[in-house]
Structures are given as C-alpha cells and as structure tokens.
Length: 279
Length: 305
Image 1: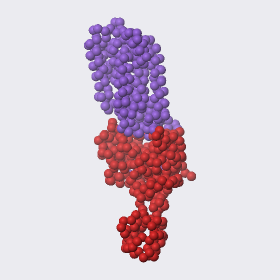
Image 2: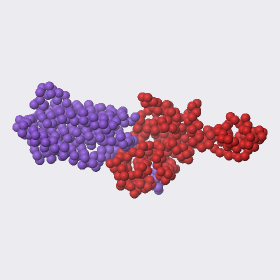
Image 3: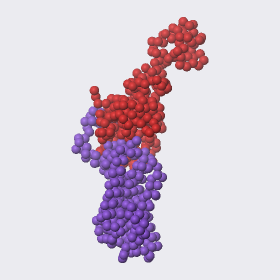
Image 4: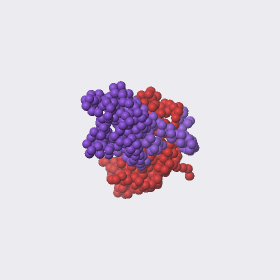
C-alpha cells in the first residue's frame, strides 16, 4: 500500500502533473500504438483460426476449382487457369479477412462489453479509426501472403508489376477493414454481422471475377460486374501479375481509392459522433 | 473557489422514448467521498456515462477537474478512472497484459512499477499472469478496479462496485477505496447498498426519475429526513394528540416520529396526561434505508441543492 499512499496524486497535483502539450502529442501516439498493438495481438493470439484457417480455405479453392476447371477454361490468353486463379484467391482471402478482423473485433467487444476499455481512455476517433484499419490491413496482408506462398507452389503466376500488386493489396485491405468498422458499429448482434458478411461481402467477392475473367460474361453481367467495387480491386491486383486486365488499372485505382475515401468518411463520421458507441 | 472534481450543469439526457436525466446539476468537491443513490432507472449510470464520455448529454455541460468532457475530453478522461458496473473483461489477455494495455491507452509507457503496486494492493499477485477468462467474478472485479487506477486519476467513479461481490472482497475493496480517498482522490460511488453509502459517503445525492431529489451531507440528510423515532409500549390508548406522529402500530406498540430529541419530553408528557402508562420505550434514528424509501415515495419532494 505504501506506493499508493505516497504517490497517489492529490487532485491539484494531479492536474499539475499532466503532460505539457508536446508530451501530450507523444503520449497520444502511445495510445494509438497501444490500440494497434492490442488489435494485432488479438488476432495473433488466435492465429490458427485467423490466419492458418483462411490460408487453408484459399488453397482448397485452388485445388478443387483448378482441378475441375483447369483443363477447360482459359481466362487470359496464354495464362493457365491455375495461375490465373492464384491472384484472385489471394485477393479474395485478403479482402475477406481484412473485413472479418475489424468487424468481429468490434462486435465481440460490443457484446462482451469490453469496448468501454477503449472508450474510456483519451483516444481520439481518428486514432481509433487508424488502429482498427491498420490491424485489419495487417491481417488481410498476412492471410493473402500465406495463400500466395502456398498456392504459388502449385501454380506460380508471373509477377509483372509488383507495385500494382502491393498498391491494390493495401488499398483493398484498407477498404475492407474500413467496411468492417462500419459493419461492426452498425451491427448489434452476431447474426446482423453475419448477414453483412454472407449477403454483401461474400457475394461481392465471388462475383467480382475471382474465378473468371468478366470478358467471358454476357454483356449484361459484364455491365453489372462493373458496378461492383470488388471487381476493380481484383482486376487491378491481377494486372500486377499478368500485365493484362479487364479494365485499365488506373481506372481500377481511381474506383478503389474513391470507394476507400467514401467508406473512410462514413466510418470516421460514425466514430466522431459516437454513433451506436457512445449512447 | 477550488475547481470542482466533477460539475454537472443542467444535464438533460433524452432517449427516443424516455428522459433519463431531466436537468441534473451537481458539484462534487475535490477529495470528497460522494454517494449517488437511486432506484434502478433513476439515471445514475446515465449520469456517470456522460461524465465518462460513454454517452453524450442532450443538453447541459459536465466537467471533470474543470475540463469539459466533450470539448476537452482528453484531459477530462485522464483525470477520471471509472469502474464500470458490468463485469466486463477482454478474454484474449492476461491480467498483466490487460493493465499494460490500459496504461498504454492513457499514453503511459513503462508503467510497470505502478501496475505492480496496484496488483499487490488488490491481491491480484497470484493471478497476474492468468488469462482473464480463468478468473472468478470477484477477481475480475478487482481487475476492473485496477484498470481504473492505472493512470492514477484524481477522480474515481465506482458504479455499483459491490454488486455480486462476496463479503470479504467487499470489505477489502472499501478499505482500499477509503485509503485512496484519504490520499486525496475524489470518490464517487453509486450503490444500492444504502448502508454502504451511509457508512462511506460524506455527502449523498438521491436521484429519482432523472432528477436530484435530495443532496446534502449524509448526517444532515439523515437528521432532516428521519428525525428521531420513538417506539412506545403503552398500557392504555395512544393520546389523540400523538396520532399525527404515528408511523406504525402493532398491538400496544406504537412507533412515533419525533422532530428532534427535545420533543421526546412532549410525547412523554402527553402519555402521562392521558393516563397511559409506558411499559417500554426505545428512541433512535431512522436508518438510511427508511430515509431513502421516504424520499423516493414522496412525489412532492424536489430539493435541488
């Protein structure tokens, strides 16, 4: 008890002891870094479930679809179907896991009630946003990398423009991480979040051209695919490998960036107003 | 005048269907041990949530150590430690990880010396490296207290901290909280255990349906509202003059409300004059439980202090 007796702050001295403004900026960075660290630790502690399992799923897709369709489909001229499929699967896994990370973290904390631990401290809404988004990006990239490393052993696609790969990987993970924040905030129950995931995220990724090139589709479906932002993420990502794509990668970059900006604006607005988080 | 530890001015909180707080104003001085009492749904937790930034007031203003909880929330939150009512925890982490992470949120690195002290003071040493999931309810409660203290806040709010806690822990907790108060921390306590508030708090505010219906020093509140109670066992009828003071009767035993100790003499005189012999007599103060029920059941009572 001695320390508490000797060091506990009398109210007046406590105020005096508060850090000066320069230190305050530094200490606010500590808050952000701690939240990021906590979010990373959260998925890392259950990495078997959060990283290994989705990698396995990705590999299973390649084995099954590659086996069934490999001989019959040629999506891009001169590209074997298995190799064509790899970037799509990598991106799909990356996107789905980035979404799963922020959304499940938020809904779990809300339902368990432990979200108060991050709502009580002096963390700003931007720190909150950045920490949840970055940890989602990290998990998405780790899963994507895992899927790539394993599937590349089966069918190695060429790597023509690595910068595009990195750029679309990061932007896609960020967009889905942000969408995960929005879904996590809006949902009050697990089944609402599951509906988000099953009825929006999964169909949007499946119908984005992961398994096929939209050029092979009828005009109506081609047109519909172009309304799906996920299509541009996958298409741009794939361009980095094959230097061919269904649309110009710059167009994809513009669509993906614009989507990210809109989603980020919505999420930040929700966090700033405390929508559904600070009654 | 010194800066109040917590000040609320005309705080209103409306939800779509209910007004949780209907113009609450209070001022808690630094170093006070302050009690917030009220039945379920009176608005205690809503008020605390607004102080802590977990909810936003519809109108009105709240400061912690002079810092507005909305416009200067960073400083306000640094000055405040909150022990939430619900037994919440993060199942991914150990006790020590939980406390380190909580320190980090408040911008504190290398806080391990203090964390060790808090762990020792709350008897959490044996469980420091155990996962939160494996802890008993009482232990989880201690961790919540520890989490509220990692940044050494001058103002500590405990929202019904002893709900569902065994007697031993309750006493340990009160011992610890008293010490914090003695060291200069302002303590705000909400509780259903009225006896606890009576024992612990210097001053009490009673909330009812989102309004403060009483707020004054505990002793004064007791004295004003309860006065003195007197139980008489009479051989003969209760004198007519005393009937207005009657609180309850069972057989020949009458409980009377007496304004102040000096009035006891008048009661005795009335019995003597009426020829009713007194077989037994008890005089005492009503306890807070009775005061509480009295205030809560009196719809006309609105005392803003």
